[in-house]
Image (cartoon, rainbow, N blue to C red):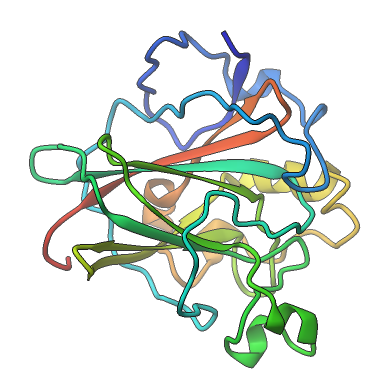
Length: 250
């Protein structure tokens, strides 16, 4: 059995499968976490776990943002060699009516690097005066959900940039039809721990925007848009979230 430790959760129980109970967040420090991105990571990682409840709540749309690009490749490792705290992002898509997994959904993610910079030919504010980032395609990728409605991406913990809480963008298409554009947050205490203590991030000042102050989220909905995060024994973070999908835009 692989060792895995719950660091921060937005609340609720997990579907444990064969893994068993997990200790709560206060018992764990940020020591032992990997640095330098996904290079040298184990080739096998434990299967993701998701909350037992809630599973069938419709996820709401959030803004696409100015840093989206087209023609994103299908790939599991989206880092393209960039540095950072490696993170295994697992998303499960279920039909909000009936809770059945949605197989064959096209899931796209994108987020900023440790500096708060996006890659690609996007709006100028996404990578100002960074020609290399404009030419690159790091921290962007797509995958198609399996029979269980699950995709998993290898990435890094996102960096922050002014005016926004740290977040990951996502987009869901089913049968080439866009059904969801949204964003996911991280627990505030986890943000503090990573940006204050992890060597790939601690050289910058602390992030300037809390989840509750982010313009894209009301204070009352922050918890519903927050990843559950575990620390795996390999020193990698596992972030998981269940997306409740409706076949019509909410």
